[in-house]
Amino acid sequence: MGIEIDPTPPQRDFAGYRNGARLAVSVVVNFEEGAEFTVSGGDGRNEGIYEVDHRLDGPDPCIESHFEYGTRAGWWRVMDALDAHGVRTTVSACGLAVLRNPELARDAVARGHEVSAHGWRWQSHAGMAEAEELAAIARTVATIAEITGQRPVGWHTRSATSPNTRRLLVEEGGFLYDSDAYNDDLPYRVTVSGKRHLVMPYAFDTNDMHFFHTNRFSGDDFADYVIGAFDWLAKEGERAPKMLSVGLHLRMIGRPGRMAALDRILAHIAGSGAAWIAPRADIARHFLTHCP
Image (cartoon, rainbow, N blue to C red):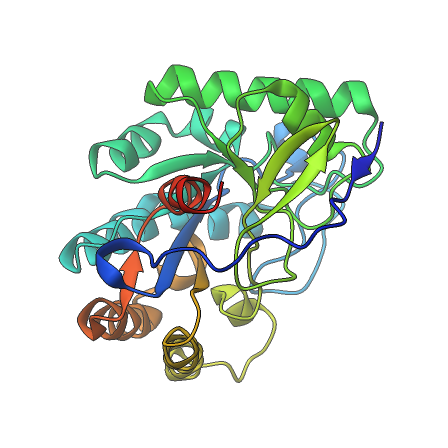
């Protein structure tokens, strides 16, 4: 059974966000390290997206060490910066990453962050058989719940989903939202398998992934771009509510030469008085309450 789109547009004229703010800001920290493909780990290939553009057929200690930087150094640097500005985030975590680094997942919960599901492996679900995908979803949920003590209520697939992804999430029954869309500045509802489901759009432009796709993207470029997006949405938010998603990766923004950019972004947003900065689950619940 496929996705049934509700012919009536989603109601968007809901009450303001928290404390009168008209712009909700969702900072997402992607926790993928340990879930990437490695030949040394028994996979048939190595992950190829990182700061050096090459692929080896056999074990690749270079790319493995790039990913390890995120958990060895980047995590603590990023988390301390978030704490310094009083910002709570959504940690979008792959199940295998949580299994291999349980201390970090528990640390996220201890700091007040939401831990959501980012697939079992760091992989696209495009072309994945339904049974395989269902098993991956179930394994991810069970692992995060067991290790953190909290069942994840959000989901985000790396890149493309399968035709079944959203339906399987809805039929699983425990998800509040998914972020497998990039088509709006606000949450919206869809009808899937006869049930109403919330989509929390994500964004690739206000995302530190650009550090890996150009040699000319500096920390100042990233900060200027995100701050520019925030200021524009804050202006639009004077007329109607908006949401901004900021995507971070431990092995990317967590490098010392980029942390000043994150500090600028957090200081600007937190100090503006125009935003409610919250985990995606909190924003989703608020939307559902004020836009039933």
